[in-house]
Image (tube, rainbow, N blue to C red; front, top):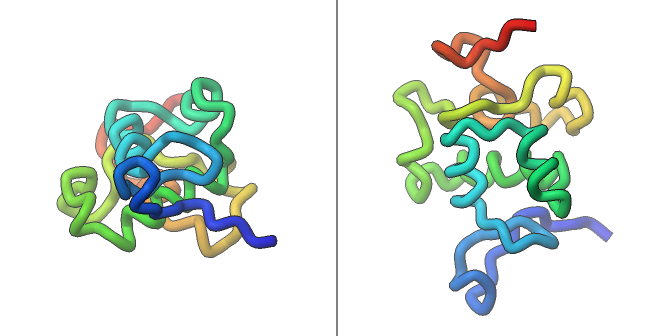
Length: 114
């Protein structure tokens, strides 16, 4: 069985797209990301989420950019911390979208020091 990670059902969450097996909408995930939540924090605070589900929600937002325009910067990248390259290694290649799922490499102020 293939899981549809982002679902839209008019009878659930008032028709707002949401993540499979959660009560979190795509919009809520984007708001958390914009507020500085990285993937580790999301998974810690919402253990029902899965890495691939988060990535699919970000991709869904990029495919419906007009609906989520306030979450994109002028360059077309999602605001807030995306996945690091090492976090994204666990994802299928088609989900490793720079600036959407994976943090934009030239984002101002978002680089972390190790």
